[in-house]
Image 1 (cartoon, helix red, strand yellow):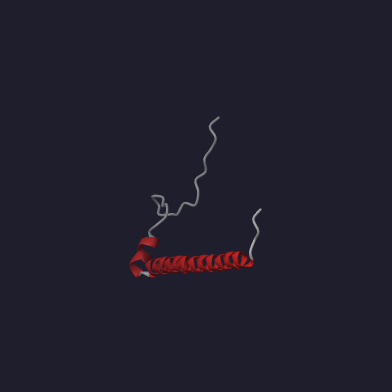
Image 2 (cartoon, rainbow, N blue to C red; image 1 turned 90 degrees about the horizontal axis):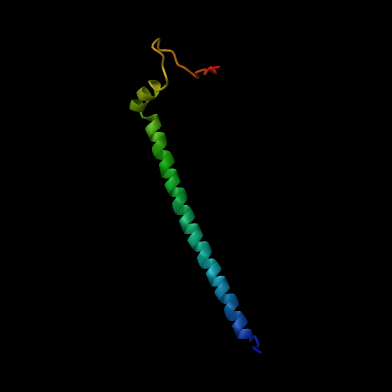
Amino acid sequence: MMEASLSGVVKIILWLLFLSAAFRFFIRLTASYAVNKVNEEVKRNQRAESNPQNMKSNASRGNKTPDSEYVDFVEIKDQD
């Protein structure tokens, strides 16, 4: 039967501490990278929305009837 020595237990504990620290560092690094990418995308979208050229195109969006009225919904009647 194998017997656990104190030095073996200490080595295992140190390895576990090292691996957990490396894992936490990797997660923090990748999380900060992901947050920065999302922030850049949000800023890019906000700049695109606040651009005056896009304001004209946003105003012309929507479903219009020939009388230039906006249509919110179209009622569909059942055919009996």
